[in-house]
Image 1 (cartoon, helix red, strand yellow):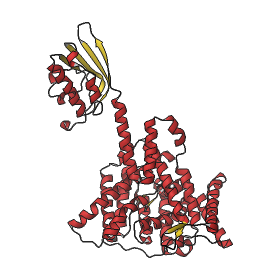
Image 2: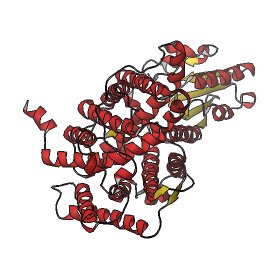
Image 3: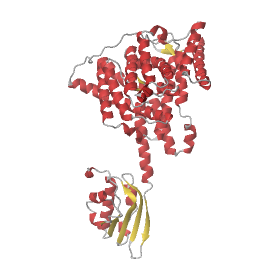
Length: 509
């Protein structure tokens, strides 16, 4: 019991104050993402409350903050425009079910297959996306219905407020870490703005955050196959984006805190949260790296901070909207810009000169794709590019050492991995038409990884047979021997020396 209490309520004061800071930072982003998704701002705010609360209670990464996110909001836009907000709620529920199934299947472990260069690119791209999002706060409605940049004294006032918050967040931790520097910064400049009567944009200029509790209900949609076919593609994309962004953020926090999380449990929690969000009539969401960085950098490491953030945000909506709407937007911008500075991997500039060119390319590629497209696409493409680069480099490393033996035979000692990418090079290592009558290929220092490798061995064996040469295949694993149909009579079996690895092939299932 003591351990459970310690897990939930360690350093309660810091955790609660950090939760308050996070809640303040959630307000403008939740509203902005609701606008992106073409839904009412309260739908975004209540999504942040529900997602943050459920994942903080059930998730596998204490200290990580989840809520409504831009990556998911972008996908929702066309669904809302074409079919209405009720179809969105149905899609969020189905996305949650898919995420729940993913977690129960224990597939969260696949996040460990993401290479480090992809992680670097993801983090840097996300930092730039957060920075880019803050620029929107420096725009205002234009007479023609569009938007225009704030100019003159209004611009300098906002820049001064943001700079003031950033200065406090930079200097205060050098003296004390008892309270979150972000909260002190927001409170200080807000009181200053009120005291001096400065004219500047406030949270209320975006939208009102006052509202009542949502009610749980089934989405008002026709429960038919047609509806399922409409929402399923959106649900699949939402589930994938949410899980990728969540697991990547989870991985990053693991590295920052030098701790281990439970990715499968987090996937389940995200699924439950989105199901609950859909039934509550909100837009759903996933992990938010910006707010998570505020939380972690402020010293929060436990569930209480996320729970507090959700409850504070709920309190803002139900009781405190009049106060929260008077907070200068520039104060929250300053907090997020400090998040950008803390999130960006500045070591990348040194790393790019030291790592292989292929890794440097992947870092830059993922960063750019994250900035111009979205996080899920960037990570998937980054993994694909990394895999192709790895396959190409591995394929170039297959080679043979040729020995002419005293008995008049020739031995080829194969080195390297034999798989789909190296089969062409493997075939070119041999010239059956011009070889000796007795030939041995020794696989002791090689490994066959897939069926393409098996087929390449078959091809070489057939070529030697066609030209009347006697070919001997040594040190092949048992599963390799089982898969060789036309060359089994050429295999020499040595039970004590043959390897025992497995070849990835459907025929072995």
